[in-house]
Picture 1 (cartoon, rainbow, N blue to C red):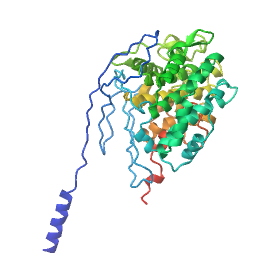
Picture 2 (tube, rainbow, N blue to C red; picture 1 turned 180 degrees about the vertical axis):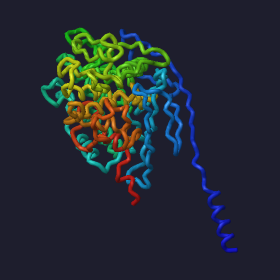
Picture 3 (cartoon, one colour; picture 1 turned 120 degrees about the vertical axis):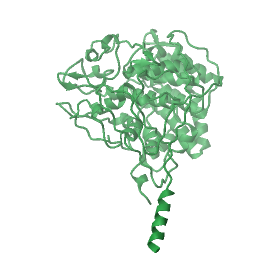
Picture 4 (cartoon, one colour; picture 1 turned 90 degrees about the vertical axis):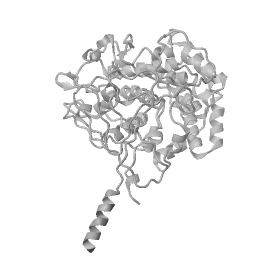
Length: 495
């Protein structure tokens, strides 16, 4: 009798175990058509038109990875690693990164955007999730205490005369993030005071005819202003003028036109600054156009169900390089990264950084020669990718068959006489910038189709150190993204 009772209790317990529930939130995506006129700047008005916020439709399942619906160039389907849930976290709850599927065959498309505080980079809630128990946080705190003088700093040129050109913009951004995370109102006020001096600094930049400074440094300033939701009209007018109106390079071209024309590091930094300024002045047609250009640079040939007709130019810098002849569009329709599955003399070159490889000498040639301009150029593409993702564009990181990740893997790979080219110096932040989304997607196993060749030697996951200089642009990405989005080994321990 006791045995029968025990058996009944066991069966009853099993029957009461809950089955994991699949949650499928559905959000309607509303499209608008981006105006692609590359002449004429919008009138700057500090207003916020209330329209529907668009977010990507996604299905979240506790146990089942998403279904891949697109065939890759290398005809291999990724195995998506199951995410691990820490049993206890010593830091605030992390915002999960949703496993990224491949973009649909019709590509991503324009969104109906609306201005929001923290819309470009981080929301105030996301800032509160940043862990403060790692070396990268300490580095950001140190930067938040650095002296600032935006007007004096601009006397440096960004082309190599000194590093002072980018200290104040990064110190402003660090003050805003650290100040918001720690409720330090003094830091926030110091950042606002320095932002108020930006129009004067821009005037000085125009006098010096140094377009590299606004190309590379307006981005973090605009992001900081967006985090603070601080948009005095004099600031908006100055940012609009320096990006949209003023002509540089011997009075020939604006930073806006440069950013929408070229692929190299200088042009791509201009594209990043254009995106940030367009957002805070609410020129959302240009935001959509920048993302369309970025999508094409990644090698994505479709946009909103049609052929992506955006075209970059190779005139001038890099025009003599023939690496572009190996990709389907050739030199008449260039892109930034070599598509997957491309070979040269039986060597896999998928992932080669087409935009700046010419800096080491014109190709194609095997093995290719390293140039640090590869990472200088890649950094702005990483920034645009994260901003586009944050704004709600679908599957940004999967563009061009995970083009940015494939390019990072190509640089790190050692095969057929090509040496590994790991990121270093003030470009170190690029690794956490890419791995912050690649690690949650692929886990500890890298699919062969991401590699230039299946036998390409690479240590995966790519090492991401928390220390090191932040670099130009958005160089605090270990702190703001990797530490927040990638659970560390410590967090998986059951204390």
